Structures are given as C-alpha cells and as structure tokens.
Image (cartoon, rainbow over all chains, first blue to last red; front, top):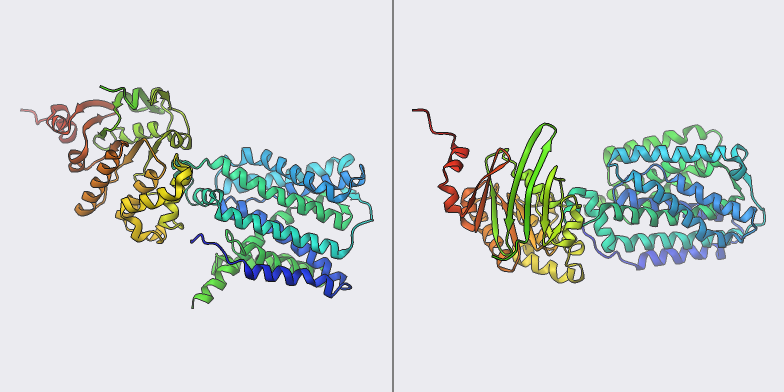
Length: 309
Length: 241
C-alpha cells in the first residue's frame, strides 16, 4: 500500500456537479430525498471505515451511536424546542460519549472477539431504547414537529456533511494518526513495540467516526420527523455500514463512498417495490459472498485491477 | 565504573509451576554491547521480554536510568528510550519499507524530527534502495535490517536485539554486525540475545550466560567461552570415567 496524496480536482468537480442538482431540478423532490439519504449513508460508511478499515476493528455496533444521537436531536427539538441544527453538535458529542463507553472495554478484545462484543452493545442499546418509553417513545416511536426545512436544504446539508466526512478521512489517512492505525491493524504487537499506544489511537478513530455518525443521525431524524428505536438503533443499520465498506473496498478512502452510492439506492429500490422486498437480504448476501470470493478489495479493488491491465 | 543504564535486579518469572527465569541480576553500562546467551529454553527470551515491557516479572525489578520500568507498557518504554526488535520479523506487511521506518520515527522519541530520522535510518541500514518496496516482498536479510531500522528510528537509548543475526548468510551477518557496532558507536547501548557464538564473540563487550533460568557465567566473550560450567551447559557433562 502506498500512502500518497490523492488528487483533489476530480472530487471537487463531482461535488460542484452534485451541488448544482437542486438548482437545476428544484421539483424532483424524490431524487432530492434520495440524494440526501445517500449522502447520509456515504457519511456513515466513510466514518465506519476509519475504525473498520483503517484500524481494522470491524464493529457491528454503530447503531448505538446513531440511535443515541438521533434521540438527542429528537428530544431537544420536540420537548425543548431547540432549533434542529443547533442540536447537531450535541448529537455528535453524545455519540462520542457512547463511543468511549463502548470503546474503552471493547478495544481490549482483539479481532472477532471485538466484533462479537459490538453486536451485543448495539442490540443492548436497541432493547434499552425500546424499554425507556418515557424518553424514546418506546415501541410506538416519537413523533416530531412537522415544520422541517426544504428538500434542497437537506440535500445540500447532506452533501456538505459527506464532504466533511471524506475530508476528515483523507486527512486521517495522511496523518500520523492514520499511520498509527495502519500499523496497529497490520500487527498490533509490533506497533506497540515501536511506540504506538494502540488503545489511544483506536479510541481517537472511534470517537472521530462517532461524531460524524452522530451528526448524520441528527439530520436523518429531522428529515423523517419521526424516531423509532427499531429504526435508529436497528441492527440492519450497523450491518449496512459494514456492507457499504465491504462492497466498495475496506480501508480505502473512496471505497466506502462508492459502496454507499451503490448500496443505498439499491436498498431503496428493493424496499419500495412490494414484489422485491423479499429479495432485499438475498441481494446483499449474494453481493457479500461474491465480493469475498472474487475480490476482497471490493469494487475499488476490482477497478484498480482492471485499470492495471 | 559509571552507574548502569539498565539494572536487572533479581528478576524471577514463573509460568504456572515452571520457573523460566530465577533471580537473575545483571547490569548494563552506557555504551556497552552486552550479549545474552544460553542453550534453548535457558530463559533468555523470557528475561528479554521482562526488560522490554512484553512480560511482567513475577518478582524483582528492572531499572532503566534510575527508574523502575517493569510492568510498564511497551509504548511507554519506547518513549523512555527502550526499544526492541522481534526474533521473528514482524513488519507492517502492506506498508512500504519507508512507511515502516516512519512508524518508528513518528511514535518514538524522535517524533519532532521524524522526516530526517527516516532518511538517515534508511541510509544507515542500506534499505534506501528498497524504500518504496512493500515490506511483504522483502527477503529475510532485509527484514532483519528493517527490524533494526524501525527500532532505531524510535531514537532508543537502549536497543534490545533478539537474534538479529539468525538465518543470515555470512555476508549479511557481517553487514548486520557492522550496523550494530555503528549504532553503539553513535551512543546507543545494546542488549543482544544471540545463538550465533561467532556474532557474539565479534561484537560483545560482555556476555551473560543463562542456563535453566539462572545466570551461570558472566565476562568477556573469551572468558565465558572457556568457562567450565558454560561448556557443560552447551555440550553436556564430561562422560563418566
């Protein structure tokens, strides 16, 4: 692997084109909504990849951050009448707090043991949220105010958040933090033996990534004006973050972006057609098997291999 | 005699009922190359691991530059200036040789001058030709050099080497010993575990011999090589007459 500076002009051009879409097609509300949610999922995938990819710690518990942050925004907005946007930093910080509570014990475990522990954390958070119905609305969910910003506003906010996430990820790769994460992923003992405090660096990656996930969750719950534990703490959300990374290419900068851009629209398509809903999991399962068998580097790995020919 | 840089004070390490190291004491003065030898299973590696922070001694103390260091984590010891290499090379396989050295330089005591450290270490180890090669493609000789280079990049005051001469051709071994001598001449103290007696005799100022977890001899390489107990430990007792 070579750690080189990626070129910046192609991504900037892409962002400019994407940013012009609402101005060019202000009435395509469905596509604006799809765009917003895709940007949210790009953010989630890119954030997850800092821990699952760079640090090699595959977590299945990110819904715990997403759900906590979503409810922080939901409650401050609906009960205390905060401006939704002002709740976002707090949502991010709440996710950071959860990430430290989860990370400090779980990062003592290595490899699959860490992954299994995070499954437990995610599910425990969901069950807890379902039972704290005074706070979360429990199984009937929490209805939120209906006065929300316009679709283009969400679209642009989502795009801006995704750009921030990719920038943080690019910075991390090129920085000392990224170097430490790559080292501990490849050989934790060797990394410790040359001075990398693996616990500290894992937690740095975990909390940076949780902050981004928390802001994404806040925007998400405002967009839907509704929060339900099974939705914002859902296990499929955690699995989705892993899948997006694997589809696009774990540990790369652009892999998770590509993965999310493919995963989320396909998921929406499958879920919106009643005769396709049943195939939802089949498609992901098949995709996952195909990637692990034929191209563990994900789509980005495949593209690179083809480009080299 | 100057005060020792490293003092191992009656260190014992047990694994369940097995006493791997029993009350071994040993001093290393600044600027020395001290060899740690002994037959297989003598406890060399266990003692070494107690010094570098990979194992906690069951009893006794390890004192570095006046401070107790036993029980401290490896990354904390690197910051104090104690770094070690791995007997079986443990490179960051997907990173280039340069980035491997960069990890040592960025997280050791030399972090503020990491860039300059990387190029000087690459030049000193002769790995500059291979700087952009992924570590997974290196030969065993280059991997051993990378182990030393990566540790050296952390800016150690005490460098602990674990069989860096093992598996090398005579030419590679000569090059490695020259490198170790250069490192010492630049002011780094060296604790060196080695099986290869030729390497030990070539560069060590002093040798400590372990057998069954106990120190059985200590002295210059020549003194130790002629010590009756050492000869018995390696070759067995003389046949009964």
